[in-house]
Length: 129
Image (cartoon, rainbow, N blue to C red; front, side):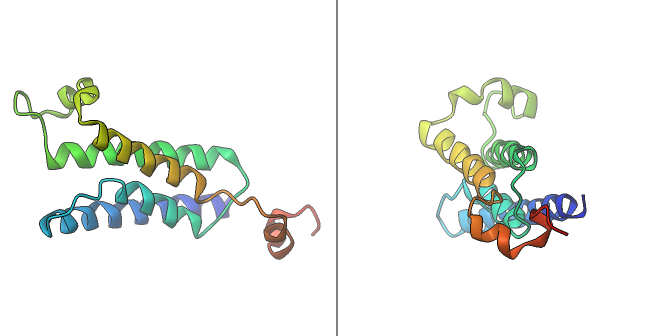
């Protein structure tokens, strides 16, 4: 349980850092929309797990953060509200949608441990006590 709380704390810290870093990068003239989602995954990846549940939660958090970040950067001109943005998210440019989805995919896979060697090094991941 402690490990999952640390995983979500790392994901939140990474997400907040990614959100602010994204806007700093935008001011430099670049567009790195997948950065908030990627940093959610990297923050959660500091406390890896084999459980799929926390990984799914990190992926969903990254997708939501990517959409929220895009809304804060460029709301629709017709109506700048978040509900309107969410109902018209399919009208975003394909590259924008791809970057949001890639951030979510990376956030899903980053905290997932797959190597058998990782289990041998981590006593919490084994059945032997």
